[in-house]
Image 1 (cartoon, rainbow over the protein chains, first blue to last red):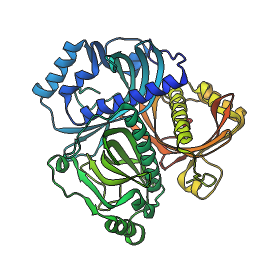
Image 2: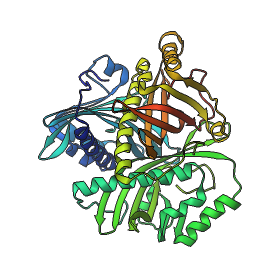
Image 3: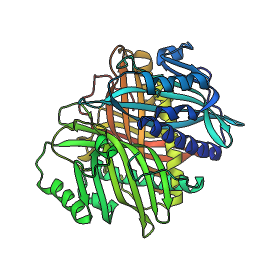
Image 4: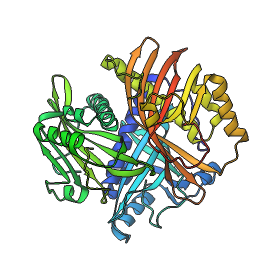
Length: 169
Length: 169
Length: 169
């Protein structure tokens, strides 16, 4: 468990409804990334969101920084723009698989949850490989009836990441 | 997104019920393939069904043909029979993992949906490998109360497929 | 299908509610293993539980023994203790992905179910690999309102397991 993410009892019916909603969120979020529509990615976050990709060791030690660290919509949009418009990299296909979604806590408009993710990568003329495997630790906030990510910590196990290009997860 | 598959708003309660039903469908469908009971596979389709396995590039370019292309129950049964009874190939175990199921549209008795799939393969005395990773783009039709596949497009990312044998996905 | 596990009709609403509950169970169970909190693992079982990890060939032949075989809480706790306190092995991270959960039968306080699992392993300075891929065949019993495992058969396809260390799945 990531520091700051504690499991607190949630009424079973509420937990089930929230899990369904979060699974729908993950599916929509990943469909955008799988389709390479990176410019739509910031729309899944609140204006003051924190987005981080970090290794398990760092996360467990409570170290804040990581491979990717974005605070606020400006940085998220900047990152999306950089990848979509300016980065040079070999063409690749990505697919995201999210399982084991768990509601950890719910209070008012905020929901904490975790899930396991796996990103598969296919480079031209190469076999499909496991690009990154890890856990999402998420804090959602409901705005205008819709859940948005206020915090997403992508805590990966994979210690060797293929290359220096860091796409969102 | 595959040409012809567009996301249209579905009432949240209906979308959730349909997703649950489709997840049950995927689990039953994959259990049959995982168990090697290929002769039961055509029963998941309507009589006029279209079944296709194709690469992402082809699919995005709107090219109709693929690695596998079956139109109608006759071709589906033929394929199942050929694999079960006549094909010669090294023994192997397959496991299908389906995640990220999303309802895209629902109208009357028809539901469009997508999901991510991964097929793991184990050959005798070899390590388990990723055999095929891709996305299902499905059109279901309800017949006698039960959802059946009217169209299944298996759009794979994996460019190198292990061998010439093409099992259903 | 494992001998002893037969699919029997379950009312759709009940099946759906039970599946949701079992998915929550899997997520909580795997979160404990993913976090390395092995000493909490026996709490997911009934006092008289049977836990087994076995290969597909053995399972289909109806052979009872496997790679791991535990009968009763004593043996489960013993195994957890051995791994947590006495085993020497290279540090590694594990992540469990559970998909395709299916309710097979439900009668009174007992529910039979299956699911596909995949365990990814990351050793220090190595790539993430598929450690074990297989199917859970589970019999749950409700005790004090909560589902517990009375039987878990982990039937793996992966014929080559990395090393002699056998962690629970």
